Length: 434
Image (cartoon, rainbow, N blue to C red; front, top):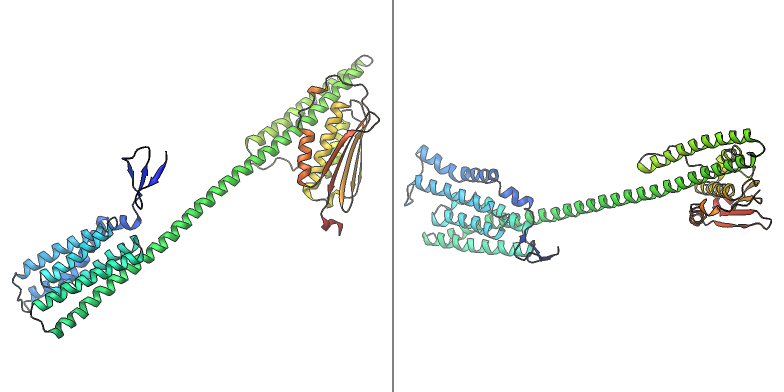
């Protein structure tokens, strides 16, 4: 469904031309349309407008020269005050009409009923309608409306004052008092409304910015979860490759021993069973991480400081593995040490799968400017004919991708004597050279 803009603040659905979707009512409109607001404005205005005449009636003081009895004028004035409050309540959605209604009510009391001094408090209600106009329209538009209504009101007040026979000096003084009061309140209302509109737009911008930030955070969290799932998938591959290669090595050894030493072969089969349980437990842990990527890792990511544990793992499974480390792994950056460990782990798994019974040598040299790790195995004791199904196809490709992140290189190939050699080289930061 697409939408197009028809008039300011109105959206039309192109798939249903007759349907008009209006924007939600603003905070100003909701406040003005509240019955409580109407009641408060009416009571506050009528008390100020009618308090003096009511007191004069009850006290019997003052002279009444109006053609209508005071009770009738007071009642009409109170009714017009209510009408003015109702007009202002519509200023939220129709600011021009609401403002004109408020000014008209003021002029009815001041000019038609002929009691301008009573109508003076009604100018404050006019100012409220001007504030609604200033918040809904641009400042030049609202100021033009305010200037026009003030000018019309001044003409009406001056005409009334001249019609009752007041001298020019009194007319001028009357216009100066009432006109300046009405003008100051009107333009002050427009200014306050415009200020409110500016602050409201800024608040709306901040709300949108907060919503955008929240959306970006949600996207970042989802990206982090995806990266964590990828990391755990790689962990799963490493665990599966290592343990499955260990199982294959134990099966090879038991097959070699079975003809001459069946009892030892049975013992190796028991080790295969135990290794299978261990592999299942490791895979279960990795899958648990995959199901709850928000949880913290169960164990720290291994690095070159754990190389002895890796060597011992393969020795327990019948592999002849030796390791030589030159330098201090403690000084290596974590990402370099972890990447090198993963490379050695993958090379050992491949050697166990493809070079059964071959001795494996590990050499790690930590220099000031680079780290070099070499894993080399001899020729297999007996060639395999079913190697195609032993690999998952992820190992070396994933290693190359990881090494690219640290500017490292991977060289893997036959060593010319029937064995296989894997060499990893990772440059170290210049800070370590110093």
